[in-house]
Image 1 (cartoon, rainbow, N blue to C red):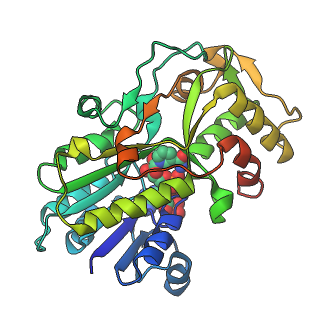
Image 2 (image 1 turned 90 degrees about the horizontal axis):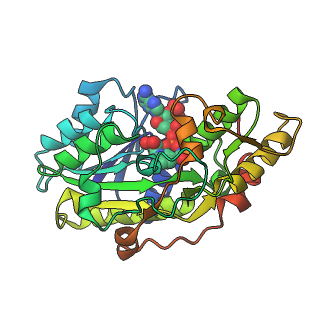
Length: 324
Ligand SMILES: NC(=O)c1ccc[n+]([C@@H]2O[C@H](COP(=O)([O-])OP(=O)(O)OC[C@H]3O[C@@H](n4cnc5c(N)ncnc54)[C@H](OP(=O)(O)O)[C@@H]3O)[C@@H](O)[C@H]2O)c1
């Protein structure tokens, strides 16, 4: 039976994934790497993990050792920088088990925005397709998740790598999440810092979204695939773009404004139609005004079948109680 270690196991994605993995494979030995100060016994019960290791992503030697000692490593913790994935790779390269090291890394659809500034749908924008290896080879370090994706793709010469790339992840109410996850946090903190929920132009620009249950199902299935034996093809053929549905920014902004109004953040239930420069600080305004066009043909061929409702149906339940 394989041993699996999950980094970011207490997270919005990591927690339901860790539980679902144990449910699917009760005999596997699952370790959760966490920075929580909660008692170990409580964490084992909450995450259904066999073993808890407490540490930070900056503990590179510790991460390398844990990675080396496990058959499969899952990075559900961070994709914006090289931590902890470069230490994980270093450990998996030294894995002396019967099979090659195996890494499942969660990336993000932010890589694939078109950097449009109009807020309008653009029929000429590139549609990134996970079945086209040239699209995956075009991923570079300056993309939102490039600092982690590039080393993982390059490590594919030495270990079996799988990159699962959801877009904005929602659906926390379906898994009783106590946090919002990175996607919602980006959107709500941007609105809070502006004092309103923005959209740009006619708001027809589209954002790709993925329900956490669709993501977790696929992650469990790809972990099962990794455990079966050596991977086929190159690392560039094991990148999976997951999308439950696309939403238009104006629709998203309208529902987000209502949800944040209900939580007492804004007096108005309406979003603000603003110029690109007023849509957010730093990189976030690019997300708000741009299109994110992805097509997961390879994920579909691997069995990804979105079953869950749209973010527009879920957002009110998702944001009802979580700390904001
Ligand atoms: N949520 C989304 O919309 C979305 C979309 C696309 C891609 N992704 C990617 O999916 C992955 C998981 O995202 P998420 O939304 O689940 O994030 P999250 O809820 O913030 O979870 C991150 C996890 O990593 C842990 N962590 C963070 N910094 C750490 C550190 N320095 N040392 C040790 N542990 C640390 C957190 O521990 P604590 O519980 O102690 O904070 C938590 O368990 C990320 O790589 C993200 O980029 C997310």
